[in-house]
Each structure stands twice: as structure tokens, then as C-alpha cells.
Length: 137
Image (cartoon, rainbow, N blue to C red; front, side, top):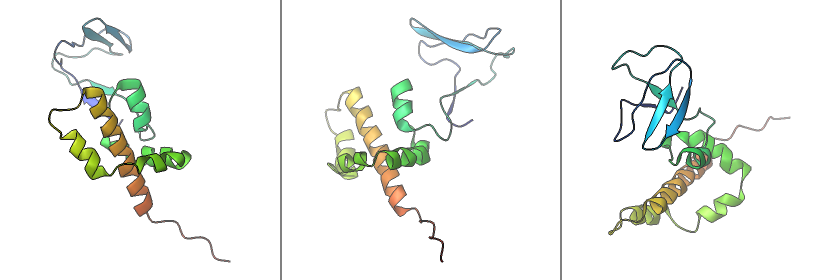
């Protein structure tokens, strides 16, 4: 179980243990139902994906990107070669400069830049990965 987050209560979000599994969003909070009793102070993990979950999926479902999704992002780029050309319109240095700009960009634009940078890291990693040798005849 990769991509787990420990929650004890963040801001106005609180976790409430119940008898069965599942999570429900409620206004100004989040309710978590555990499949067993949870002791007070016990760490709870929320798993957002596995090693095959790409940043495109994480962004679409949960609104964040994760640097540990590199392998899944490589697979995504291999399936969508046309995306690589779009990534070339800016350099990672330019993207990082935008992320560091003053005044700061709006949150949705910062998130889009972090997603673009994650895909660029995957593209660079894919290009640097050793290729399997072709079988000799």
C-alpha cells in the first residue's frame, strides 16, 4: 500500500471511526468508516492508489500529484506519445521559475505546473532508462 496518508485531523477535517469500511465526504469534514475498532491515537492510512496509479489519475480523482508515481507516468507517456511533444513547449527550469514567481500563481495553475513537471520527469526517466537488448539471431 503505497501513497498512504496518516490522518489524525487536519484543519476542519476529522476522522470518525465506525463499524464498516468506506469514506463519506460531508460538509466541512470527512467521515471515515473503519472495518475494525480503531484505538484512540492509532494511525489511520488512506491509500489513494498503487504503483500503477498515474499522476493523471491522482490529479483527476483527488486533486494532487505524487512524485512517487514516476513508473506509472512513464507507462502513461508510452501510451500517449503525442503528449511528449506538448511537454516540450517549456523547460523544467521555466516551469520551476513560474512555480517560484511573485506574486504566486493561483492554486489551480500551480497544480497544473506540478503535473507537467511530473510528466517531464517521467519522460526524462524513460529516455534514460536502459533498453532491453534485442535478441540476437
